[in-house]
Image 1 (tube, rainbow, N blue to C red):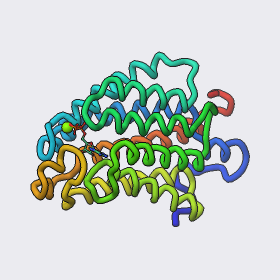
Image 2 (image 1 turned 90 degrees about the vertical axis):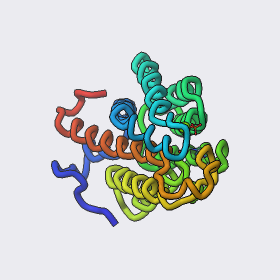
Image 3 (image 1 turned 60 degrees about the vertical axis):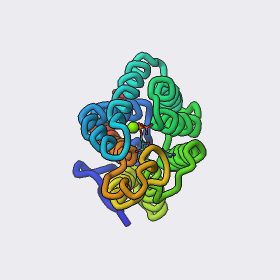
Image 4 (image 1 turned 45 degrees about the vertical axis):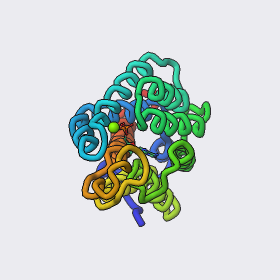
Length: 245
Ligand code: ADP
Ligand code: MG
């Protein structure tokens, strides 16, 4: 169980600072999307190599193209709420990314945006609902279960770890860290699996021994979420109160 100070600069235990530490606002969501875009750019070739082994060598290209379009759209979206940002991201993904990843990630973002509603900010429990809505959406569209060697193998354990951390008294920071770790472990755990969904399933037993590209991109998104939440916290505490809406 993770309790106590999660960040080296400390955290006020009461008052408005404490409240800010538990809330994700539109600035933090923008930061997350920016972190995802940067990470997908940096890892584009790696994701494509993974897809070359068990697919058609386009996952990095797909994700990078999709997120480049997402950033163009959300940068021009003002005013925005966390929900509108994510729904815009989802719609953009569906319309710009072909292949499996387009509708799957597009649905995940759309469902998360719907779950967040029109509020200007949200707390850790609402984020749990958003993650659950994303997983439900991905499974409704793709019908994959854990163990099928897909993005579900990163998303489902991330959601479970996030939920467990909150239940056992963790904070937003420790919960996103747990989710990120679980997503990364989940992606690595796809290596010995045989694919039962998606293009990789056509390979049958030859899909064993390779890490799933979609589970890997999902893990990158959770790592980006952790970085965004931690960076957002540090910015808030570094600034005088009231300097940021
Ligand atoms: P495509 O396979 O159409 O070329 P991508 O290469 O962009 O699309 O994405 C491949 C990834 O999509 C896989 O690594 C896997 O994680 C994910 N995927 C494929 N089919 C499914 C599915 N039915 N459910 C969940 N994820 C899936
Ligand atoms: Mg592919």
